[in-house]
Amino acid sequence: MFSTRTAARNLLTVSRRQLPGAMQLSSTRMLFGDKNKITIKSPDEVKSYPATIKVYTRTGDKGTSSLFTGERRGKNDAVFEALGTTDELSSMLGLAIAHLEGSSAQSLVPRLETIQCLLQDVGSNVATPVNSKSQSKVKRTRFDPDGFHCTNLEAWIDEMSVGLPVHRSFILPSGGLAASTLHVARTICRRAERTLVPLKNDIDKESMMFVNRLSDFLFVAARWTAMQQNITEKIYVHQKGRVTEFDK
Ligand SMILES: Nc1ncnc2c1ncn2[C@@H]1O[C@H](COP(=O)(O)OP(=O)(O)OP(=O)(O)O)[C@@H](O)[C@H]1O
Image (cartoon, rainbow, N blue to C red; front, side, top):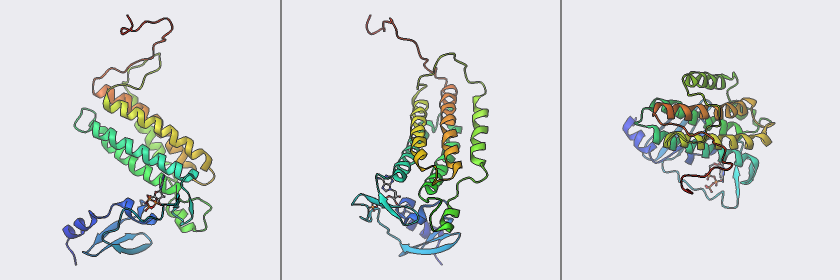
């Protein structure tokens, strides 16, 4: 038997991203290890890997990479476009979290962390086309079959919309560092949604619903953050014939 501390130390050498495709999935339940190997226990398999899995495998050097099914495709394939964009979105949420922590809007952080995990699940869904031969993998990567996460986003949107200032004009991406970062995340989210469209027959419809609802949530989250931090949002002003302070 190995102590939890030893296992934790060994785990430090391996991030989820470094593990083979299958092990990057959210269905991975548990990792434990000894000095020389990491054992990963997921619902239907237990596998061991060397404790020092390297970040690079060199298998992607020629411009192809693998889906969860093992199928290799060019890195310019629509699947990797979508995976890269959801990854970019999750990274931007990480930046938003960094700006929120310690602020009067930090209660938003756990929600954003939940969303980061769900984007990982959307990625798993994207990386496993629904008509793949391996139906067990398709089943394992099914995204939100009950629509729970989409409904949950709607509940968050409704709750956080209460008390937001009402404007007749467009709200410009603004409201401070955290809110503006959330606006950037919102625009990446909309791009992520566009990257899913060519894949719509290969992914679960709930993935698309979730990403669509997520951009609405991020809009409200940005506005809510500005309000919590007492920062006034900027509003669109028609510029025709208008001289700026700078030009005067
Ligand atoms: N350029 C990319 N854009 C989006 N997704 C990618 C890209 N490259 C790889 N992926 C996805 O991310 C996973 C992990 O990326 P990784 O960099 O380990 O893959 P690789 O480039 O195929 O391998 P290596 O970097 O070890 O040569 C891959 O299995 C693939 O699903």
